[in-house]
Image (cartoon, rainbow, N blue to C red; front, side, top):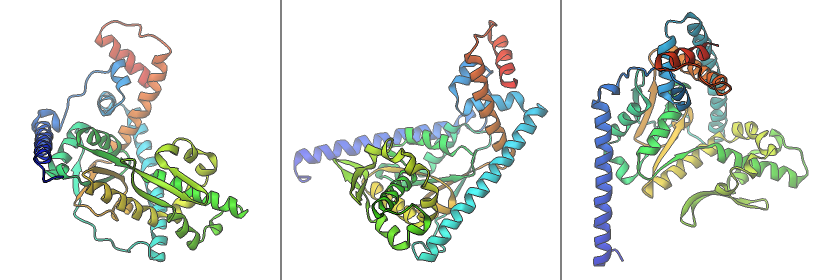
Length: 351
């Protein structure tokens, strides 16, 4: 009973603990924002250890080392153009799925989107970006909140989410991927039981509705999970995410189901996130604005880079890093000293 002296003492202890955690979190965020390195950090010298680190500091160091190299500039420009083209293509696919959902009445044509805070990530480390977001959250993480993070490919959403997941208490990162896979498994199973080939025509609006009803989200044995229950299946996503949901019959048919069920999955995700928030969790949702606009939360952030060429530079640096690591893995460094190592690593990056 919460009314007992023992329960009261326990609750007091919990409150003190949460308050101390929040103070520490905000203190860290403010220290990162006030530090000279929060906005611009001098790139470390190239080294094999830095390449193996494989994070944003590695990419920034490679960009700094090759910034004036015309070959790197051309490579980065090509990468940027491919990223933009791919983003445009993915955006149109999402838009098509949302238009279908609006036409079915599953989604509103114009959701009431809360104000979005822009975070300029140019020249900032991922730690500094995450600290800026945490500072803007204020006391919200103490009770739990839903945080959506959007932005173009290459702006650092995935890296920032990883930093936030490590910083925020009771933090979970939501992904729609396994929901799409679960629906696809159900759709394929339905077709197999009906003795028909899987196709878009086989999954009518009525069938899709029955598939969605087979998915539920809630606590199972004290932990949040998605349950697949129907058409002879009774599975927990946590237990089959890397087995049944990765089978070829599921993987090859995901694009078809994803286009048809955008609206249903968006609503499922929003409801799941709110359920976890009410239980005190901090829920991170990363993706594109088209889908995140349908998630209700006051904590909305978009990562921006005023100069789009930086996106291409980051991707180019990542590709160079991966190739250089392969080259260096097959041969020991032949030089001694930081200057010599930097020169040899640079040569590996250029090869």
